[in-house]
Image (cartoon, rainbow over all chains, first blue to last red; front, top):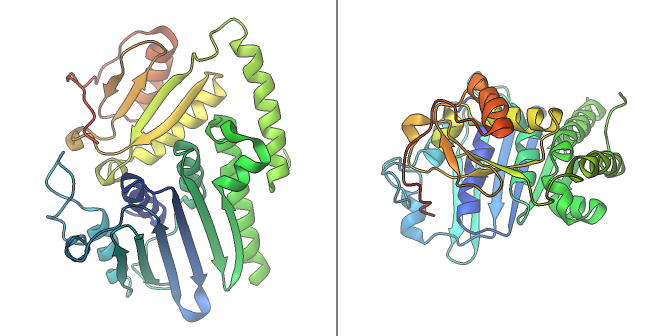
Length: 183
Length: 130
């Protein structure tokens, strides 16, 4: 995992498997405080205390297709290497929130990568799930969600390939703009 | 082209895309969409599944093929990632392994367009576990 965008895709997959109806992805960039925070919160099945404790263990997985589970351990490793932490907050029936922090200017912080493309793919590939994306730069926020897009364009629009490609561009433009505005 | 910025812009794209789609499905059956599923678990992502998914989204749209591109989890073929499941309308799904851009291009040109099987099929009695 060389980009934060890939971690988002990966951790969101956990939420999808947990049967979430809503997944929110939040990126908060704060160069002034030297911190970048990534939060992925879902309203899926959640985990009990024991599972939650073992979730960051690569030799633990809830799957039956294979015996390892690397998603959360890799995120934890990258966060720790960049002077940050990873926390999991979860309870059965209450959903799960994964929060990772990184030193913004840390040498080993992975670049954000193609976050807009990841969000566009998540929205289009999971039309039944309300994906919410919030990006903030020094407190200046922009957000988009599956629900908003469906309300504006109709239920089926999100799986339209032309929409996916344009959505990526829209996210890019707006995120770039909030950063420019603040700089 | 001017930059896309708002949901209103997106609405315009949608309307344009629908006119194109209408032209396309006139002779075809309306449910004749190709289903492409890219495995997107840790193993897939680490092997480059995301750029492959981007490739399918971009190229299927550019080449005017009516398709839905979605993602699945790990199917247990971690050794062969990125894996892509392709289902042509009314047919059994086929799973391709070790999909790079070259193979993805072949899948579109040969399999999706002509129904001609290409290298890299994972020969299994394919059953989804979860």
